[in-house]
Amino acid sequence: MIDVAEIISFVNKQSDIKNIKILKYQKSKFDRVGGINNDKEATQGDIAWISAKHFRGNLNKVNNFKGSMLIIPEDISDDLSKINIDYTLIITSNPKLLFIRLANNFFSYLSKSEWSKSINFVIHEKAKIGNNVKIAHGVSIGSNVQINDNVTIGPNTIIDNTEIRKNVSIGANNSIGLMGFGYEKNTENIYEPFPHFGKVLINENVEIGSNNCIDRGSLKNTIIGKGTKIDNLVHIAHNVKIGKNCMLIGQCQLAGSVQIGDNAWVAPSSSILNGIRIGKNVFIGLGSVVIKDVDNDMNVFGNPARVIKK
Figure 1 (cartoon, rainbow, N blue to C red):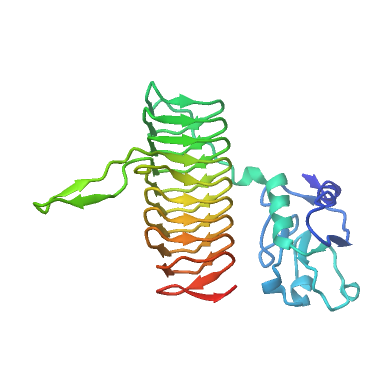
Figure 2 (cartoon, one colour):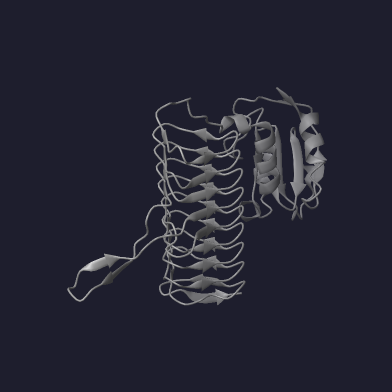
């Protein structure tokens, strides 16, 4: 059981989250089993949060909450002192971020999964493997691979011609560093494959989901920037360069030699034409087809993608 005082102590240390206020303090303990929940399903011993979008000053959500701790947005016009609250209530500028930190600090075991120790994987004798690397069953690692410390690789993933830096998580059934798709037709109308001499470079703190394909570069490398997160079912073609802290969501496709700046968001089912340059802090909306370069700080949507606002 986690005492509320321990949680409040942790909350008070989150100095980078603005305007945290403990409006109500109720002595309670939080059960480590099911200790987090959403505001509608919460029961005694649960922690929940409400986003600004769903809150909108609706005090019924506050009044009817059945859990033990609720985190709400700071934009409250009503006087909460008039409401009978029998749980701990916290307001802040970013309820979701505070909730994430509480969940990860106190309840991370709820989502933790470890692959069983296995001898059913293949590592080429020339591959270089760092410390604390966890490799699941069915994994195949080729000769031209360097894996640094604290890397996790999920089942049935194939990796070749790749350098993976520290603290990277890779899910199941990925294909990383294999040959990309490039051909040239000769005089007899036969396609001849373009050589792929590059590799894939995955920088620190990258997270890659499952069932993704990341092709190695042809004459230069395919690069995934530090801190970038890749969802499931994403295709990244040869020579693509992705910046730091980008988010690539399910079923998006990046054609060859696309370049994406730092902090970009590529929404589900989006496609980016080969050779396109995407600036920093760009948001690409759901299902967009990007056929022109996009400048920094732009939001684009549609087919073909058009700038909606900066």
